[in-house]
Image (cartoon, rainbow, N blue to C red; front, side):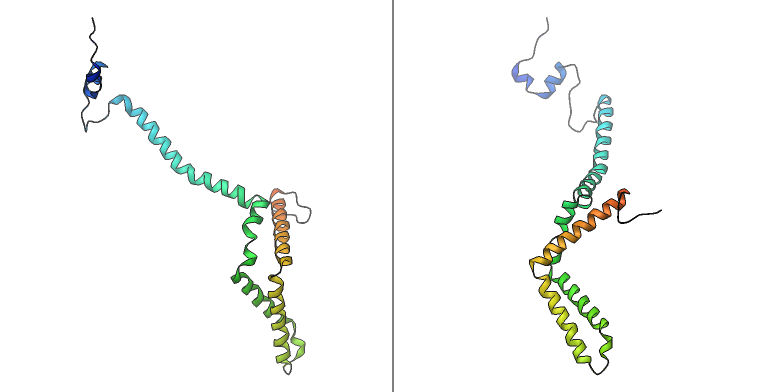
Length: 162
């Protein structure tokens, strides 16, 4: 008759291991041979996970932000409100207005500078309005839709040739 160990001795891992037919477990002992394939598979799966996680996160971001028109517009809609962007746009408008008015001549330099400065101030006032924000969103939405259409090869406005 097989004598079963007592509950107290079952709590001892070494006794349970002997009862189950194995050898006593000792601290620091290398794993048995039967666990090596399992460890190899687990290690391979961990390595695959480590490699594929950044790829999956990047693909999810691209799909939700770059390829999705609504995601792209949501990402760039606040750019127009940034003071640095407004300063660059104002400087560009002022420079272009100054370059477009060469017919005023050298004698009218203060007038040309004043008109260019006025154009910059008006550009700043327009950029602060809700109309500019709406125009910015609509322009980015249209541009993104067209870029995706060109990349897919079904744009009616632009033809991509390779």
